[in-house]
Image 1: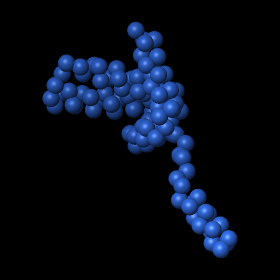
Image 2: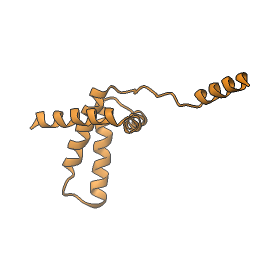
Image 3: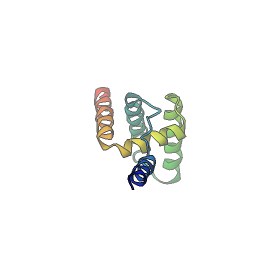
Length: 102
C-alpha cells in the first residue's frame, strides 16, 4: 500500500507544469510595451483598414527595433499573464518609462 501511495504521489508531481523562464527580460518587455503604446497612440483618431494596417506595421517595427520575434513576444506576454505580480511590475515600469518621455 505504501508503495502505491509513493508511486501515486510521484505521478501527481510529474503532472505539475514547470514554470518556463521568460526569453525576454522584464526591463526589455517594459520598454517594448511602452513602445507599443506609443505606436498605438500614433494611430489614435484613425479608423478602418488604414488604422489596422499602420498598427500592424508599427507592431512589426517595434519588434524589429528590439530584435524580438513575434513568437517570442507572444510567449513572453503569455508568461506575464500567468504571473500577475510580475505583470504589475512590468506594467508599472512601462508606465514610468512613458512618463519619463513626457
